[in-house]
Each structure stands twice: as C-alpha cells, then as structure tokens.
Length: 431
Image 1: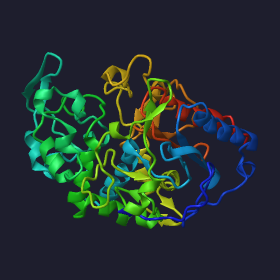
Image 2: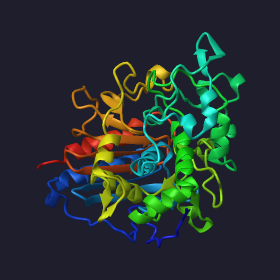
Image 3: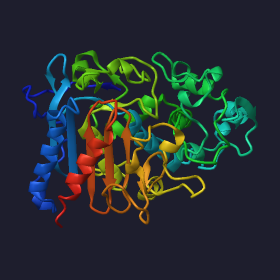
Image 4: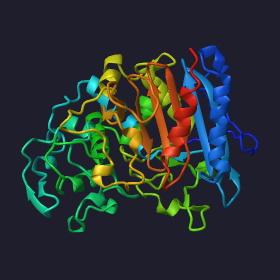
C-alpha cells in the first residue's frame, strides 16, 4: 500500500496527531498503573534524546486495550531540524516478522497448507536446494537435504537459511540478488532456492531469509501480491492507514532518518548505511516478509493489540484464538537451542543482546519461557521482537499490556530503548 497523508499538528517536540482509528486514552490509574511511573517512563525516554543517545523517539503503551501513554521526543531529521512526531514513520525491519506470521497463519486457517508440508510442494525448486556439508571446514561443499525443508522450519527459523554475511562470498548470496529495490520476492526467492542452506533443516534456530520465503508462499497460497494480501486481510480490516511497503512522495518527510554514533561522540546521519532491502518509494516491487515494512508506532501498537486480544480488534476478527496461541508458544527444543546471537557471531562480546536470555521462538517471533531465568522484566506468556534500526515491541498477556518504542539508530547500546521501556513500565504496575 502507499502510506496515506495524515494531518500533522504544530511542529513541537511532543507533538501528536490523531489517527482515524484512535485508541481510547485513559488515566493510567484507571487501569491499575501508577501515573508517577508512567511519568518516569516519559522522562526516561526523553532522556535518551537529551543525553545524545538517540535523535528522536516515539513510544506508546496500552493496558486493558486503553492507551496510557503515547508521546514523541526529539528530532526525526537532525539536519533539517524536523521534530519527531507521534505519526512519524519508521523502518520496522524485523518487526515485519510478526505481521508475516499473521499473514501466513490466515492461510493456515483457510486450509491452504499444513505446517509439515514440504516447501517444495509450493516452490518446487526447494526440493533440490543443497545444504552446506561443513560450513567451517569447507564453506562451499554441499550435500542433499536429509530432511525436507518444511513450512514449519521457516516459521520456527530452523530452516537453515541465513543472511548474506553468513555465507562464503563465492556463493554470491548478496542482498542485491535476493532483496533489493526493483526486484520482486518471487525473483529473490527463486534465486535463493538455488543456493545452499547453512545446515540441515530442523537442526537449530538461525536468523535469516525464512520470512521472505514465507511471504512468497503467501503470494502462492492467496494468488495475490504480498503487499495486497496484507492490505486486504490485515491492514485494511484493522484500520491501519500508515503501514506498508511504499511511502507516497507527499508523506516522505514523515520518515525518520537513521543515526549512528560519530567519531566525535555525537550522532551522525547513517541512513545510507541502513540495509537497502526496500527503497520505500511508491511503486517499488520488493515486499520483504522479514523486514520491509514501514509505519507508525501507533499502527503497530494496534496490530499488536489484535494479537493480545487473541486475534481480533474492535470486533474485527483476523485470526482465531487457537492460532494466536500457536504463534505465541515456544516451538524450539533444547537441541535446537535458545536465541543465542553471540554464538552466531552476529554481535561482539560487549553487546550480546543478553536481554533475550530465557526466550524461545514461536512462529516468527520471540516468546518468553516461563521457567527460565530472564534478564528483563516481563509477564508470563509474553511474546515480542525488535527491528534492526532500534524499534521494539512486546505483548504481555498476563498483565494485558502492549508496548511499542521506536527510533532509528544503528550502533552499540541497542538495548537501551527496550530497557527504558521495560524498567519504567514494570515499575508502574500497582494492581
């Protein structure tokens, strides 16, 4: 969809704009949350900007389906001195995966596939996709699949698919061949099917192109382009007007710039360094199920509220309760491993994303395992995920909370945003 223009209020650092499907905003105390603690959350988020750690931030929290805070601070464009606003647009990157899961499972409910179906049943080229035999010893030598790649492997990210930096350059696994402006996901996935998996399907959890193959499967099952399916079956019914793959020219000014630490300690514009898996320009054709969406914090909050409500919002059903339960429970065995980014070599020892300790993986998002030791506060049954450019959300069924925080930042200290959100919020519950 093309993101539509929305009326913007005066350009103030804490400016707001009301969507057409506004959530009711209430006094936090009326839903059992301390107003003083919410004030602390608002001040702590603003402090991320005032201390120079972020250029601008938007955050929103709902409890019992009611909005208890939704604010913006700082700038979305430091060079042009444009304020961050509540309707500012963000590159969601990996937060696209929860939407991807909903799209896939709509087709599951309609009987279009079974979880254990081989992917090759729908994309025949995957029947002969090879597997790296010894990734560390010989990064190009392959063997056949011993276990066929299934839809469930894709949903649980045990498919063996990684990202370009996980492969030897000789395999030519660059983003430009798979996810790139001007391509389609059909073209990208067809190319991907000719390249080897990192390991045999089902062996262990690994982050990669699984969501993009799932997006292509949605196209095959539904007979629609992926972006149109999302609009017709999720965004439109939920009244989400500011979420999609393409941003209209007259809305482009709402898209926040990406920043990173500079050599002098201040923030510098790093938009050109953000992965170019979508141009976000009107009429582009690449629709990444794993990371291509953009939108506002509030639209994402409403989508997440639908999941907290067991598949419906404002009386509009999207998924069945049993399907949401399937999405939001851990599907990894101990042998398949917990979410261990450091072991994959994705992060340095000083920034290992330890906040994921005690989390497993549902169907395309992280889930809190109740009997594990956790590094962050949260409720039983919680599910969540984050985006590459420092966006985050979580859904807490125990406390009836949905929370979203968004900035656009690349660099160390990515945990800061989520830690501020959780530390303040879980100190706010009084009932």
